[in-house]
Image 1 (spheres, rainbow, N blue to C red):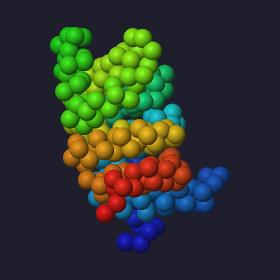
Image 2 (image 1 turned 180 degrees about the vertical axis):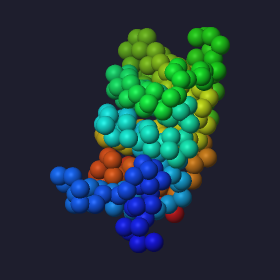
Image 3 (image 1 turned 135 degrees about the vertical axis):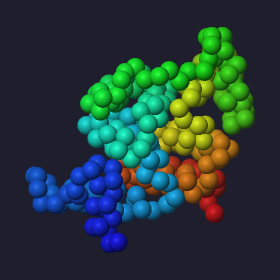
Image 4 (image 1 turned 90 degrees about the vertical axis):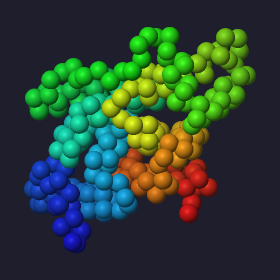
Length: 252
């Protein structure tokens, strides 16, 4: 297939619509956009369309670009993502982008679910039986991937914060979210890498989570593929920042 044919094929697969032609006010721009994302990037690397849509949904939630998020939630459903997988991808953005942006993304996501006749609320995916488990169960996931990195790095904090800040991170990121069903640990770590990349200015955390993603079972190629896929949404500089800060981890 040539580039135009690839773009048409991917647009049909994800959105059930034709690629941009001469319609609309900015047809040339839309052709450039679709050609890059759907004709070039989507055919480069090993990740399948379902994983790419979860990556895109994570990025658009992070950027709070809600019209595009709405389109890709529908696209995710179209290519076989379950509603629960999409919800978990959005939920786990919260510790990194904050609760207000996540609530905006949830509202947009639920609008699409309702339009598709999906009953809300979705089935609960939590595995904790009591709040007292948040730290212990979170640490069981965190420690093999990150050790005591955060506790060691912030032991200089004054008073109770030296223990409270690392504890909050363990309880929230790993206890509240990563203990949930619906996505496996490998996928959650890959989505975290692209979430942090989309934020911009979080290269320290990107590098840390690339290391975690590798330990969770992602290959170097899969991580690079995810970062390159992100470039059409985050912009190329953020892709390069992420690649550059992890060069020694990802180089062949």
